[in-house]
Length: 380
Image 1 (cartoon, one colour):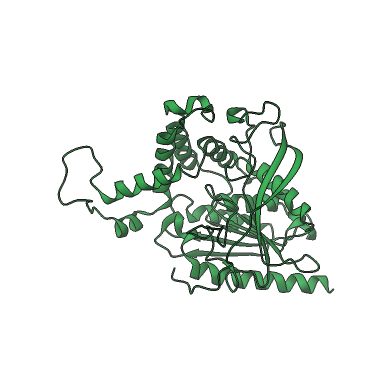
Image 2: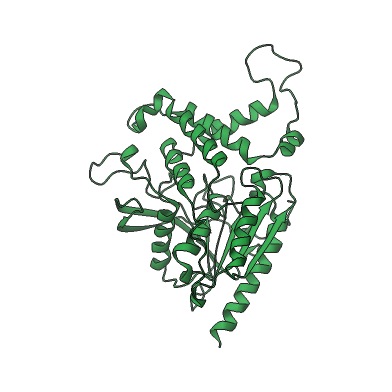
């Protein structure tokens, strides 16, 4: 975890790509679409060094570097930058906010061009395939015909797998971390409880809270608390909190006596300041709908010969290793060049945002291999 701090990217700029419309998997049309994105490093002359980074559930386009006046860097700053896993001295790295999100890309809080009011629940239901279709439009706009790699963890890993299904001819490799081909009933159940927490908040008002003076912060906070429990492991909670009390002795009240209670409340309260409740509903539903288990990965030609790196974490009980192992088994049976590692971490699902040493070694080696083999094939 204590990876040597390499040179920072410094201040980074957020850009916006807009296009007229896209037809969604549901058949509905989404108009006047905006995609917020950032890029790091330089695109080479033949545009062959581009890597797309897909963010997880609550992530955004700021994967690395600092926004002006920001105190914290992007969510994967330890992995992206000069000399890091995704080395911006070598690669041109792109990250965008998913559609349905609330960090600049078109989502439920955006203005409906027809009503000039926030979409709220009139926003069409989106899927992981829709998110990736919008990303493909961005990549086309940037003039990139083939990505060297697509990488991401958790929901980001789902987008990686969707790229391999939807646009295999447009990527040379895929790095899927702490993810699955489809949600299990347990994973769907956690998301449903979180959604119910939001929708049970009276201030949610059937999604129509944007033009009021209140929002369903209580429900959204509880949803985040539920989610955060699943991101950690029993051991990491024990090591960090145990049964430590915030004050000496029990209060003999329903107040939060334990440090872990205070921590979850802090996480919930801070989350509502940066995330939209309706986006939580839409994105979690997109994850539940995701299922490429019967699509992955039908190898039909050399043009679809994508190389895979799959990483899981031993203590991740939200996306347990057996799901990655099943994925790897299917990939290898189809003849794909697939590398798999289970990292022995105690951090649970959060490990993909913490275990930078091991991830860096694997990703660096994998990308060097893919880059070398891609150059060789071009020169044949």
